[in-house]
Each structure stands twice: as structure tokens, then as C-alpha cells.
Length: 355
Image 1 (cartoon, rainbow, N blue to C red):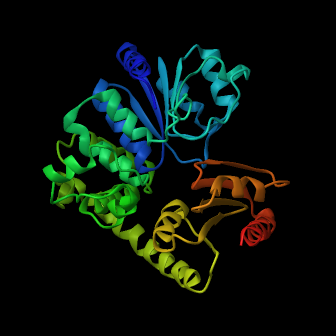
Image 2: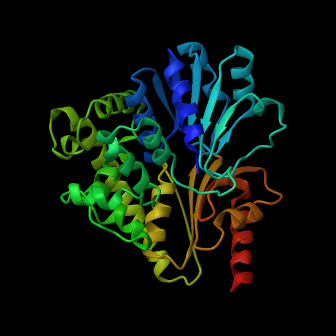
């Protein structure tokens, strides 16, 4: 867990900053985390990171564009050394809040100066979503619904989930910890999570408008009611959901005829590998799920498994130039399309060796 002392330390960074710049993962845990911190300090700009799975040097121009006095990196497992080096050179303090395994050693030069907060980096490691900790940092009861959105999107039920259900029976239901996936796929709040998450898959100008709209909401019910203010969000949701549903049904057909591995690949303009992998894992919890999104010469891979998905993925990538990161049961990677057959064969062999 993140101690109260460290929570207060992050709070002080937020209070001290005059022009913070928030880089957050392009999913609902990342967005919810940014919203909680932004609504707490009421200052700064937010940038959704669309590179997968790392925050890379392409975002260096944002440092010149916004001239921040603090940089907050939220829910991102990998950050390029070049990006951190540039922040250090410019004298910009970096506050990195994450819940993935630490990707660096403490003695690495460009990581020495960052302020790193992670519930896994403690004597008693835990793995709550970043939005859970950002809610603890903000301490604003009225923003509990934002924390709930971020938590359930990462298949996590916080200790306040049942009280939230009691106070919002139209949005949520009481669930046991073993039923955490139901929160995302069988509740009204879960439907809202899907709407917002698909809204993040729009062009940048519309994403910026959506975030501004969300930051001013007082209740999630405001967005559940379709109106002119959220028409663009629902329009994008309809577009993405149509494509998503078709891909999901194709992948399910593969899952029905496999006993150990569901390997699904697709192309196009929309990266939906993480969302597809999650819902496929919900439907086929006994299978290892591998969803590959191909765009040009690169492949984004999302892996889900009740076994150690991260270890299986890293071992299957041995000898392949790639990046990978994530959790024990849910992780992602990028590699060249030329190496995809080798990765697939390695994964098949590894799963066979376990059966």
C-alpha cells in the first residue's frame, strides 16, 4: 500500500505546483486518476498517452508547449529514459504514480531524481488501481463515483464499493470480491465506464472536449442522460461499439473451439486489444487470452490469464525485440509483425508445457 505519509507527500506536490502537467494512461483507470487529482488541485493540463505500452520521447514537445513546473505520470508501466532525462535537464520534478511492477533499478541515473509511488514497492505490497490511490490523495467524497469507475475498469472492488451500491442502487450492486468482473459487465456504472472508455478512442480534439465535460460533472447521472452536451461522446461510443461487438463475436467463436488458448488478431484503425482481452477473459476465464492489434509493421498485444500472464508473455518474447509490461494476470507488449508468428509459437509451446 501507499502510506499516509507518501499520500501527504503527493498532496504537497500538487499544492506546491502552479502549472502541473499530467500524463495519464489512455484507459479509464488513467483518466479517472487524472480527474481525481485535477479536481483536487483545480489546475494543470492533462495528456492522454496513446503510445503503447510506454510514455516515449514523442511527448517531449509537450514540455515545451506547456512549460510545466511539475510533471505527474499516472498509471503508466513504462517511461522512456529520454523523456525522464529531458525532465531532469529542464529541472522539472517528476511524480510517477503507478501500480505495475517497477521497470527500473534505483541506481539508474535518469530514475534517481524522480518521485516514485507504487503500492507494490512496500514491505506489504498491494496492487490497487492508481485511481484508488488518487481518491485517497484527493479525499473528496463527492468524487467517489470517479474512483469507482477507475477501480472497476481494472477489475478491482474497493472497500467502499458496497456502501456506494447502497447509496446508488440504480448504478451499482453489492458484489463479493470474487465477482469483481461483474462490476464492469453487469452494472449501469460498468456501462458508463464502457461509454467513457470508448470516448477516449476519438480524435484528440474530441477527447479534450470530453475530458473538459467530465471534469465539470457533479454526478455520473448527468452523462447517463443523453443530451446535447454529451452527444459527441455517445456518437463516438456507437461507432466504436459497432466495430467492437463484431470483433468480440469473431473472437468468441475461436474461444468456443479451444481448450487452452484463445489467440485472436485483427487490424484497422481502432486499437481495442485491451478491452477485447478483458471481456474475452470474462467469458472464458479458463483460457489464456492473447489479442493482437496489427497496424502497419507493429503489433500491440494484450494477454490475460489466470496463470502468470506477465511471465508467459516475457518468456514468449525472448529473442524478440519488444517492450512489455503490466500485471501478473493482465499485461501488454509491442513487437514487429515479422516476429508475431514466433511469439505465437512460443506462447503455444509454453501453454502446452503447463497442461
